Length: 244
Image (cartoon, rainbow, N blue to C red; front, side, top):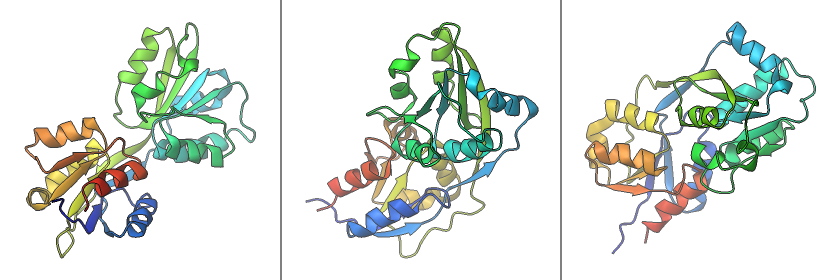
């Protein structure tokens, strides 16, 4: 018989959890929000501003997350009263694409996968000889995307727009939760540092991807479910599958 899960801990950063909270409530869960991460915007170095000023010289601009899209659009808007034409604005998934489209950009995103590997399959990134690609991301992001583009002949530039930091304190809710949603490797590390004892007691941890799940499993946790992606709808679908 499946375990009935009711109280669900959402660990997305402040300002990014409301949609997930609403979906959970509509599905009959009792969501609780406790951010594991703080997203801290970084000042732009002169070289970073130059890349944004030269936006029309790039074949493609890749936004690795909704945070990158929000901060990137704000920085670009200061320099571009009208968006340049002929640039492929690429989003890692639909949540990121939605931010770009709200700003008036024609965003392209993979139909499935919602990660760097899926973006690399887009037609506009297959033939890159003598083309420039700009990556807008957080500090210390994965290098797979940039390395693959370089292998395909692209000149790759990156701009770090934000830094992920552990929340100053993770206040574990009372009464205890039945499930914990983990949507990034960084948030998992922060949770482990500050709330390992509580995590061990949680009936279910839902990982937002196989990569996140591997990190959780390697830390010795077997109370694990793995969603198709970190997107809210996929996290909810995975959780509902365990409910009955």
